Length: 534
Image (tube, helix red, strand yellow):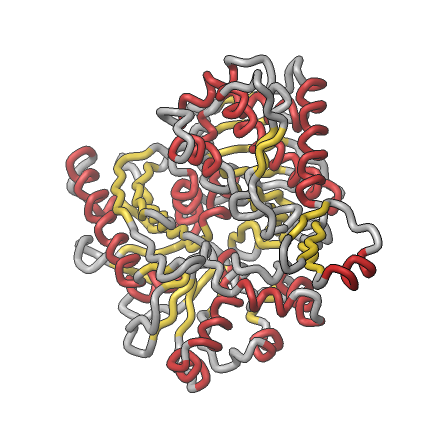
């Protein structure tokens, strides 16, 4: 009996990976193509939409070549395709499918000033209520507003109804189907600031308030749907069904089997996205969490809370590249275990500000507690500990606003290979932490969704378990010591996150941690600037 195979495209920020999985969830073939980013000015991050598409074709070609060599030449055994993609990045194009501008990447900060105007306004409250998100450059909408305000040709195209908007999944689908299919899924739509997550549709009131009423938007469907067919410009002898679209973090949650309320996943990459399944009902948050759609299959829609950590693996990379404390990021595990504790050293990795639950992008990274006895091992351990500490910040906030208790945390991503980190995380959370050991978990989740959409799997219960590489970490004997360390972390973050008073004179600028008689100081010393979190 011939096996069924599923092809998954995982279009990421720095590369596109294409993976063919067999029915049991094992990798049969894989291809990768790098993707470059452009930085036209400080804070701006762009990509070439046509290059994004070409990396997909290149990775598909490489993957299919390996499939022919190692599995066989019968490509008809590949039943369906699923696409997972970098979220929030968007493209604009015209009626002929020509890009109107570079793709604006999720990392881009060009709309910071626009977000500042929105914060504290009545519209900000409507954004939160309708979309579950906050006015932050991380999400697509405010960056499109920036293009409207700064690029007359974009403004003209939008107002005349000639601008097609799409997150990366939509752009790829449009190109792969020769412009015949213009669709997206709930998980991508809900990251734009244009989508009402309760009504599951585009929010015309918000679009009008943003001055975007003329914008063309794709039809929105569940993550499993008949999205169209493609032969990848002749790379396949017959067109293949595209039966799933899903944002990469949501694909990872699905691949991690976060199917019930209280289950959560943390993707430990450059940053960290934590998704907690909250079931069929949206949970609103007033403590820095985002409400989002976790995943959707047919008529079923599972909501989630999301916490976004800005610096995770990037902290370890910084120690390696900028300070030269490690030859390889993998060395961090042994270095952390070479000392009994952090020696009172804390690293607050606010290199680009602090994300959830603080959402303070104005503060900078700090290393505190250094003494003459501090070694590089203490600093490396402090950097690793900062990752579980931030995850605990987020999980605690999620449990507080949802009323749910975390049942288990499932982890993926490059740093999930670090055993010290995962044991420390289990001790801190007091819950089981599971590394399922699946390579390319976003691609795996997209493949599972594609299999459901194409009928390869009849239901969730018969999805591949793929637990051969699973490793479980239980809370151990060091819980009390780890908790004490976390209390120290909270004190350091509170100190850093506390509003600052900056008093300026012609000769000096003094930064003070407290605010005594602030009106009097302002009157005598000149202008007072107060840095506030959100």
